[in-house]
Length: 176
Image 1: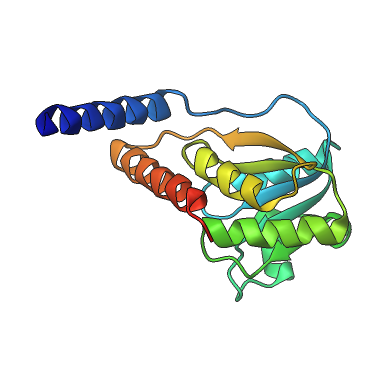
Image 2: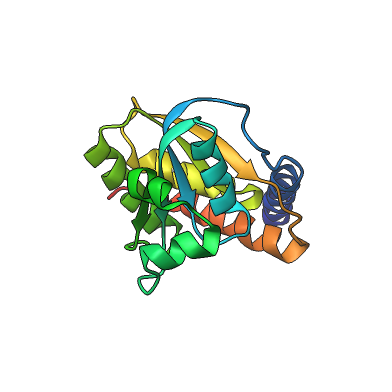
């Protein structure tokens, strides 16, 4: 009886992992939002966020999780951001150190700006957990569009992220 239960749990886990690995999201269709939120940590994320602002799909960009040593001028030089765009449309967030604190930093910025919609940009393998964490902190009336940067993660990356996703979902369901 116990062996069957454990075998059932292993199968559920394995099929969950398989579903996670084969259904990674892709880029969002052209959709206008008030803001684009970029979580640092992977290649292509900031470039995608800047593209969204440049095409007018979002008014402003918030980059969460920027290293405190990175100054706005250095950021602009690294990503070839025009001064005008940097001054009007890009805000760097220095408080977050992980996905959960990204969510808190994003929620605070969205509240200050009084925005009602945002496009979340992160890597495809990170989107499920990131969107879950961010959605958990935002008011229900804020519309969040998922815009994943396509990558080619290895099995170890997928395995680690799937386990982080499970831990995040379980911890979100626990009473405070």
